[in-house]
Image (tube, rainbow, N blue to C red):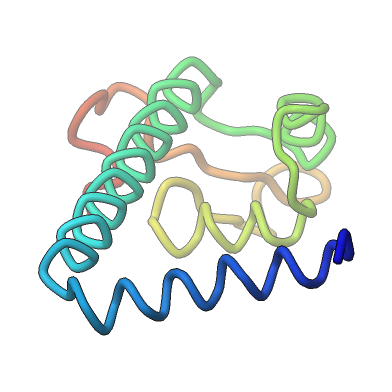
Amino acid sequence: MNNPKHKEFELTRRRQKAWRERREHMEGIRQRAVARAAQVRRDNHAALISRLATLPAMLTKDELLAFLDGKYTGTYESFCHRLRRHKLMTYDPFLGEFGAWVNHCVDKGDDAGKV
């Protein structure tokens, strides 16, 4: 009876029963969790914009990697996709010797990267 799986299923059954019997209560919990997660996402995005605004207008790949050093849990590629998707930075292969990242957050402050 001290099986960890038993405890896991017990909690699942308890949540299922709560959804059946107290739907409004559980929906309120879900909505608060979604709102809290959305706020955390907005805060993280605003923090990223403010950190990118401290960087120069153009960066090499090595400079961008140095900026990321231990501060981003994903891969370099996923971070680059995020920068492009939110139009925070673009890559221009014709700038510099080997191409460069153009920082669109410089001198824009709060207006940069609005989604």
